[in-house]
Length: 285
View 1 (spheres, rainbow, N blue to C red):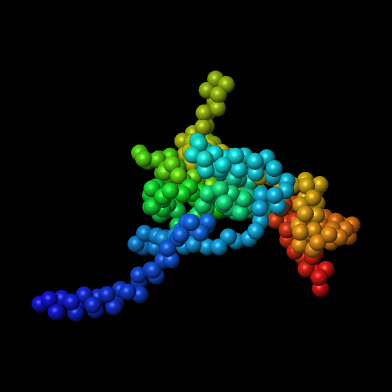
View 2 (cartoon, rainbow, N blue to C red; view 1 turned 135 degrees about the vertical axis):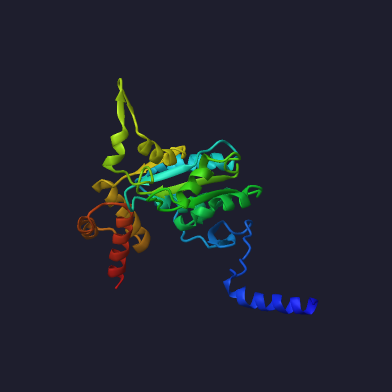
């Protein structure tokens, strides 16, 4: 009977083995500073990744106020002082994601560890933060380009982790998120139909209150906006010089940078970088 049972179990494992996730590479937080969280049907695991680039906070110009606020908040967190979850919102290409990624190059040696969670894996966010609760390191869990279309599982999971459970988020974990939407959820004219004026106070309806309640759980809001032309050209000069060396930034480059932004329909850090890559690359040919 035991032999027959063993054979049956062996055949069963042969059938289901290809459904099982590959054995994850363990993350050694003494050497790794960044990782990705990957969800699978049996839970999820961390995958160590190298730092994407060498960009530091000093490379990101035109967002000094936002950088200082985020660095101060993160350094307080690393020292065990009170700190807030952060929502970086604003126009596309304005440096929201870059400033979070640059934190690891600037503060990694101070003990910061960064974990990125894809928007589609947020349903397993509670499981992730529980695995980090008793770790000695301090983690920023980073969710990039967030937006939700309704009360899906990802929305509920993020809301719960931020401030919706009895235990609350671990003391060694902060959530940093970036989004083009200030309130992370779409807002329509119909949402305002429930609002009413009581005396001189505006009371929002339930629909608006529900949508504000998620972003309201982030204690630090940082707005990112399009550059004016002077700031845009300053950023262009920085990247052209960084990529092409002294003398690469000249009057011809300045004039072409203005045309490049006009054709792209906006001025931002991303546009400045793309112009610099094109200008220096073409010049090198």
